[in-house]
Length: 542
Image (cartoon, rainbow, N blue to C red; front, side, top):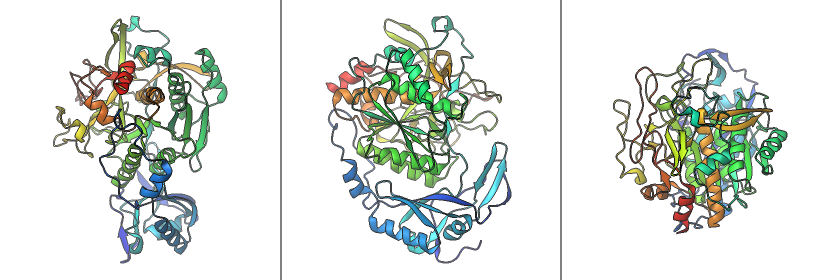
C-alpha cells in the first residue's frame, strides 16, 4: 500500500514479524475486529508522581477529578469519532479517563484508515494477524492520536507461574512436602495482625482463563476462611471463561485469587478479564482497572508480562503512562518480574542476551522477584534467590526469578544512590534495576492452590505479585489511606527492617550463565528483599 502525503507515522509503532514467522496470506478484507486508539492527555502529568508513605497518604485526587484534569479532552474524542466515520469505522466505546476510543470495523477499512497491510503469519507457536512497519494516521489527527493497538494481535504477555516441586535440593526436608498455604507464607513474613483488608479492593489483571466459584468455596473452607467477594469484570470481549486445565491460564487466575484472598480475606477482589494476551487487551485491562470508579481498587496485581524489547515502544509508552496515572491516583501496582531468570525467555526462544520483563521494568511498577524459602527459624525465613534453571521443552517446572537492568528505562531517582550492577549485555545500561522486592516463588517451597478441582503446589513470581498486593491491602486498611506509589518510600526505608535482604543465590541461566547474583543491599534477583509486614506497617504508622 503506497503512503499518501497526508498521512503521518505514529512514533514507536514499528513492527517486525515474530522470529521465524512467515506470511501465509493477506487478511480477508471483510474480517472484523476491534482496535484501541489512545488519545493525548488534555493536560500533561508530572513524571515525578507523588511518593507513597505516611507524609503523602491521602493526597491523591478522586478518579473523577483526575479524569477531568488529565484524561482526554472531549473535543479530541469527538475528532477521533469523526475520523472513524470518514473511514467507515464504528465507535464501540469511548473513555476520557482511559484516553481511549474503541473502534470496530473490517480489515479493509482499518488498512485504509491506518495505511497498513495486514497479513496472517505462521510460526512455531501458532498464527497471528500482523503487520510490518509503522502505523500511520491522517495528518489532521496526528497531534491527537498517540497509539493504535489491535491491528496486530500477536500475544505479548505470558503468565508467570510454575507448578510442581522439582529440584528440591539441600534443606528440602525442612519444607512441607505439600507446600505452604498462603496463610503460612503471610505468617512467615510477619504480615500485620488484626487486619483483613476490609474496605479495600484488590484489582487483578487476567489475560485469559477463569475460575469456578466451587473451587473458591472449597479452597477457602479448607483454610477456615469464607470465600472472598470476587467480582469478574469483562474487558472488551473478555470474560470469566475457565479452560478446565491447571496448566492453562486457569492456573494463573486461581493462583492470583487464592493468594490475594487468603492474605487479605476481607478485601473485595475485582478480576479484570481481557480476551487474550495481545498488547491491546493488556492495555485495555490495565486502564479499565485503574480508572474503575465502581470497584475503585487501591492496589492492582499483574502476573503477566514479556521481554521489554519484544513489543513496540508505542505500547511501552502508553502502558507506562497508564502506570503513571495509577501512581498519581494512589494505586499501587504490583507486577511479577518473570520466571526465566535474566534471560526472560524459555530455552527454545532465547537469543543468548539478558532481557528485563515488562511491565515490571516500568519505574511506576512495584516489581516483584522470587525467592525460595529454605527454612524458618526464630528470626524469620532463611531464603535464597529462586533458581531451578530453564524450563525444558516439555514444560516441566524449572524456572528462576526475573531481574536485571532495563534497556528501556533510565535509572529512577530513588535508585540513583544504589551501586547498580553493570548490565549483563555488553553496552547495555545504565538503567532501571529490577526487581524492587521479592517473596516466595520457588515451587519447591510453593503454595497449595486449588485449580479446576485439583490441589497442587504452585510458584513463580506470579505468586509474589498478589502476595504483596494482599499485604498492601492490609496496610491500606490499617492506615485508612492508600500507600500509593510505594517505590520511593520503600527505597528510602530499605536500611531499616521493613524488608529482609536475600544474600544467597542468583538468576543466572543458560550455557553462558547469563544473569546476576544476590548480595548485600539491593540486587538484580530479589531487589531490596522480602517483606517484614509488621515492621513495614509500623514504619508507615510511625
